[in-house]
Amino acid sequence: MDWVKLEQIMGKIYACKTGRPSYPLLTLLRASLLGIWYRLSDAELAQLLFRDLLFRKFCHLELGGDAPDAITIGRFWARLMELGLWEVLLGEVNRQLEVKHIIMTEGRINIIDATPVEAAQSGYGKDANDEPTRDKDAGWHVKADSRGNTRSTYGYSVHTGVDEDGFIHRQTVTLGNAHDSNELDTLLLGTRQRFTRIPPIPRKPHAKNWSSLVLMIKCSARAIGATLCLKRIWSATKRLP
Image (tube, rainbow, N blue to C red):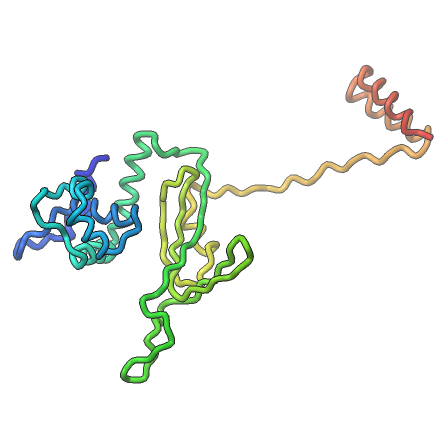
């Protein structure tokens, strides 16, 4: 992986030259990737960066140095989303994998699914001004499992498009009540081809008497040849009374 190009993409996150120097951008990016891979919260990730040697080595943190805390990691994520750099980083990673033929560019299978994410304020409580505290921008996500049980989550839906090898190519975030079909044009890879339905070939009716049988055999003989015609005569005579 060419990490230098990823660092160049994130160059404008901390463009200010005044103030205390921040952690290296690649360190924060590597830490964020660890949080995604191991499904860690910002607080859990900060604890592991402080005490786990493998995590520190991957993030290029010195053995006795400081580690990013939960607030720093959260702010880095917020800046990525604010500047719209997450999709750009994902596209650059996939591009490098395609160049190295790790991701197929032709004959890919598209798998699209939505994951519900509960809103931070999803209850029925009210604030001091008697106003509902529930997130007004969220919606209900209703999904049935393999056993037929339905589960409702008030929040948002993360629609993900992956290939058959599990590589994530595109992601979108919508209200919880948005269906996957609404994001097809955004998540599908390549171009959508129009498929034309081929009508079924009608089967020839069975002969009801000797005259119609002879006529059908004569018509078929001109197309399929005499040898195959003899085989059809033999099989057809067995079906007659």
